Length: 298
Image 1 (cartoon, rainbow, N blue to C red):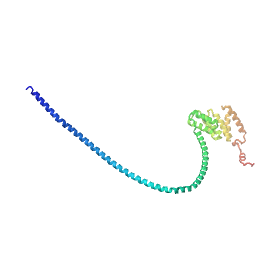
Image 2 (image 1 turned 120 degrees about the horizontal axis):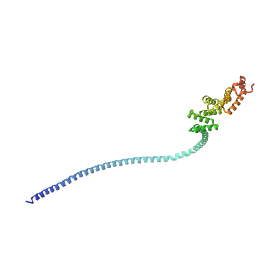
Image 3 (image 1 turned 60 degrees about the horizontal axis):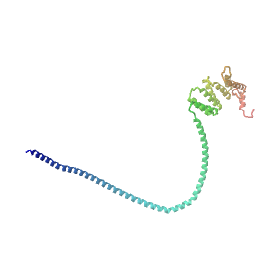
């Protein structure tokens, strides 16, 4: 009786073991069935792809054969044309040789004409280059204007000293436009008048000198402007106005430099003695008629 529980326990464990042995094969079978179906599906897919590629390969081969046949037809046609052309090449060469002498003669004439034309072009080019050089020089002179204030004024002074009056005037006017109401304005304006006076544009010079008399009577160049105004009026034959400026220089109390007083006195003496050769405003009607009369008439 004491071994009864042990026997019951052994039977129970045996039943459990039998159950486990029966269950394990069934699970393995289920697993193998699932993998088999998956593999079968993959095989089917691969077969479809292989079939599709076989179909594409057949179509490609068919197209290649069609294209090869077309190329062969074209080659045959080209060979036929080539043979036909070979037959006519000889005739064409004969015609070319026959016309070659005429062509050579025409070519020589053309070469001669071309040589003459080339010489004409060369001469025209030389003339054009000379003109272009002059234009470039003038353009460089117009555009070659220093940027700095001191450099600009120095360049204008150098141009004035070298008697390049046009360039000097351009530089001085550029200075005035860049630096209006500058302390050197009166001096610059007088030098502009000097360039005009030197070019015998006396009326324009008087315009610059008159600006100084009206607007800068206390400037350092006022006596220069007054003296040159007297000279300009004398050059124009207006001696009465000229004398007025010279007398302003030599009058008592004038602060004009001694050199201007000396020169003004000489100018006054010359103008007072003039009978009409210099002073147009002193000429009589008889003098003007005599001057206008043709040579040889009294």
